[in-house]
Image 1 (cartoon, one colour):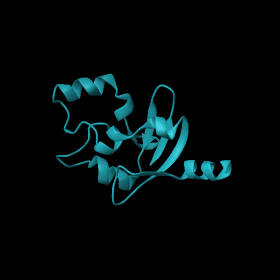
Image 2 (cartoon, rainbow, N blue to C red):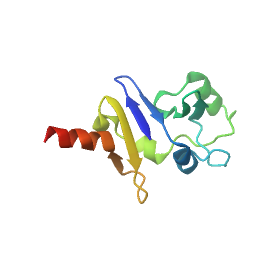
Image 3 (cartoon, rainbow, N blue to C red):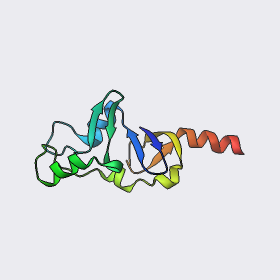
Image 4 (cartoon, rainbow, N blue to C red):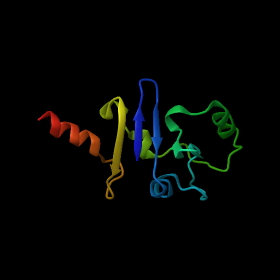
Length: 109
């Protein structure tokens, strides 16, 4: 999963497999914040479009879930400003392993 952390919001670009696992499109447990566009899938949880918020609150969307525990529990402060490629731990989705951060730590030592 790719994260682009900015000072004011974070763009989250899950892979196709992560979308299936976390966002569950086409199911009753689908997350309302997953969108698809020119860059592929994007999680809009951290910068929710006002028009979609209104439709969701009015019950006018097929998707019924308001985010996932993984994104809700994620601390962008820990990642820091910049781009990060994060690998989801298969045994516990809340555990992150940022390859870019590990490489930077090794370079700093």
